[in-house]
Image (cartoon, rainbow, N blue to C red; front, side, top):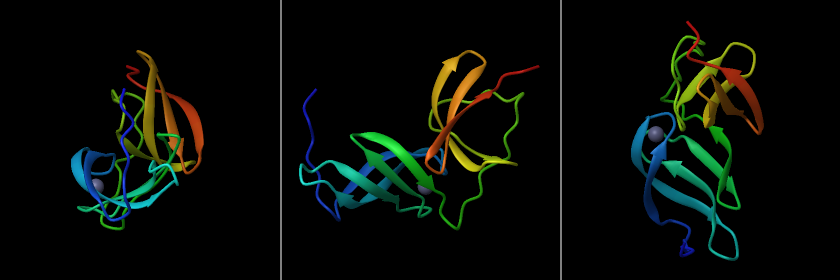
Amino acid sequence: MKKEVFEVGQTLKMLCSACDVEQNHTVESVTKQGQITKAICQACETSSTFSRGVKTSVAMGKSKTASPYDRTRKYRKGQAMMHSTFGQGEVTDVIEPQKIDVLFGDKTRRLIHSQN
Ligand SMILES: [Zn+2]
C-alpha cells in the first residue's frame, strides 16, 4: 500500500464516529513524515487523534452526543457510544460476533454486544 503524505489544513474524507458517515475532516496536525496525528470533522467538530495510522483517541464534538451503550445492539467498527462508566467511546474492532473493542479516551476496553 502506498503511503500517503498529508499537510496541516488539508481536507480529507473519512468516517466520523459521531456522525456515523464519511465526512470531510480538516487535518489538524501531522508527523514529520506527513502522517496524520489529528483530524477534526467539519460537520460536528469531533477530533480524532492517530498514532502510526491507528486511531488512539476521540473527542466528541460539542454538537454531538453518542447514543447510550446497549449490549443488545449490534455494533460495527467506527460507531460511537456513551458508556455509563467509561464515557464516550468508539468501536475500534469487532473481535467476535458478540465482542467489540471500544476506545474510551485513550484506553481500549472489551465489551459485549448483540446479546439477546
Ligand atoms: Zn462528525
